[in-house]
Length: 212
Image (tube, rainbow, N blue to C red; front, side, top):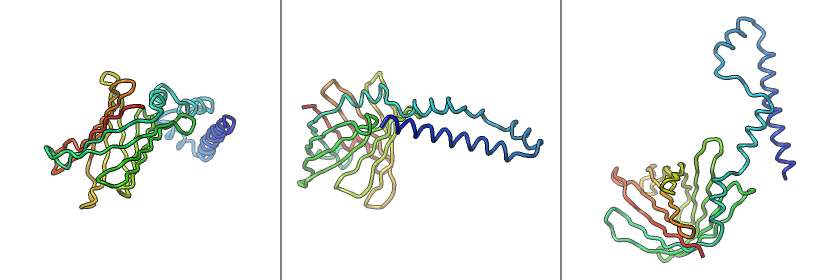
């Protein structure tokens, strides 16, 4: 697998280098060459530098280690609110968390009961080494859409704030939502979701996760 990965990197670098050479060969007018050099935003990286950039991009680091620390089974105590100040609704589920694709991504599979119906959900979490941000996705059997949010981790608060858009099934319009994921302690996590209704943000969900 490692050899295949290195081969892929070499192919990408070789392809990029060919494009650079082709661009130079196609520039036949000296005046055009001078003009191109004047407007060039940055100097292209050589093949070795490109390979290192790709390797750095693909190698799991400390953020991925933090995600891997959550591997295991978690009991989830879930609370929902339809509107600000509304009556809370309770539900419960179990999350099985594991790392996939060589420790590069986290996958969580949820099973439980919600509104008297069987509930299943799946989330993924990624840390992009290039953009220095996290991306989370979520799908479940309660709809046909995918929630996607991005954000960053704050070491001081031990929390991750992610922002995204979701489609309101009632009117088909996109509305913003915000998610705050907090590392309470080694065996406790708290996830809070904030939806927007009538142009006002309110807390719509809280999940307290306890590791078995």
